[in-house]
Amino acid sequence: MFQKSTYLQRRERLRLQVKSGVILLLGNDESPMNYTDNTYHFRQDSSFLYFFGLDFPGLIGIIDIDSGKDFIFGNDFTIDDIVWMGAQPTIKEKARLSGIENTGSVDEAEQMIKKAYQQKRSVHFLPPYRGEHKLLLQDWCSINHNLVTQNASEELIRAVVAQRNIKSEEEILEIDKAATLTADMHLAAMQMTRPGMTEAEIMAIVNHVALGAGGNLSFPIIATINGQTLHSHYYGNTLNEGRMILLDAGAEIESHYAGDLSSTFPVGPRFTDRQKMIYQVALDAHEHAVSQLKPGINFRDIHLAACTTIANGMKDLGFMKGNIADAVEAGAHAMFFPCGLGHMMGLDIHDMEGIGEIFVGYDGKPKSTQFGLKSLRLARELEPGFVFTIEPGIYFIPQLIDQWRSENKFTEFLNYDLLDTFKDFGGCRNEENYVITQTGARLLGKPLPKTIDGVEHERSKAF
Image (cartoon, rainbow, N blue to C red; front, side, top):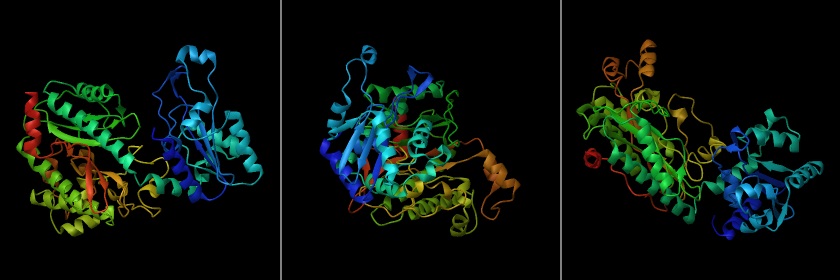
């Protein structure tokens, strides 16, 4: 965790933004996999971590705005717990790490919240994403668990987003570390992948690098020859020369800040000719998007610029036709690029997605309902301190090709005969992490090779 002054300042700013009432921030607890004592890897709630810094299960934070007091609640471990877990700090000792002197048990937290409701004080909480938190809020706040999310405090949501969206220098340093470790994960895969291996072996290599550096994964690894499946977590395919592997993987370091990179490289030492021509179009879109990054520009406009680059490139190759500006406005380019250019990142790999993408990425404004554009997670003016991904790609999705062709959709823009010959292509993308500065943008982490020559040079180390 950072120095306690960081958390004191964050909570004070939150107090000033929300103005009155009680803020309830629920920390996560252990979560059993298949029986009580066999738990999933513990991961603290990111907003609790942001405002309190305490990476222990079973804690509850309360900020009483009106009294100016902060509280940490939790139950101290018994000797039976310590026998299995070793010596553990007390609740008071944990709270002091965050600059808090007021502590109590979980039962006392319940009493405090129920009393606040009896006194008709505002109790602010964030949308819960865990079932046990919904049940706890149902009990403490007398709200049916099915209605808990819609009763979350928009005032608190906006205040948390306003703080967490702007990364401090100490946060940027942590994300930079995570992005560098993430790059090492990708480089290991590029340097060790050979024909005949399985996707599972690549996944294991990547995971090993993160764990060996004292980190963990920021999300489940994507390591697939079927790059057209955007979130593929199947690892059973054998890698054959002539195919590409799309790797999307990120490291989460001890501070829980995350990296998120994608790379695409041939299973053999070199790309095929048709892989080169598609890969280059995606790379052109990537570089064009990066060149547009600066404060004050709307990320939606950068996304559409990348879409236009892809559409122009695919027209040059014969996959698209007609007026490209009209094609992009209509959404025909989403045949190849049906997702967004990037997303905010930080303590969460999709930062604060559980709080609400409409507030994080759209500043409360409505999203588009158009296929492709509706998947854009970030569409607001960029500000210094924003950290996000740039990740345009090109994907040949057989089911989408068949569906749109059967519907005669965008026939004025798409060459379905040529598309049919690329159904076995897969997909490709590169992904990097950037922070907006006062004058432009800066890459976080060490760079991965992206050019065709650079990737093939890295792949030569495996042979």
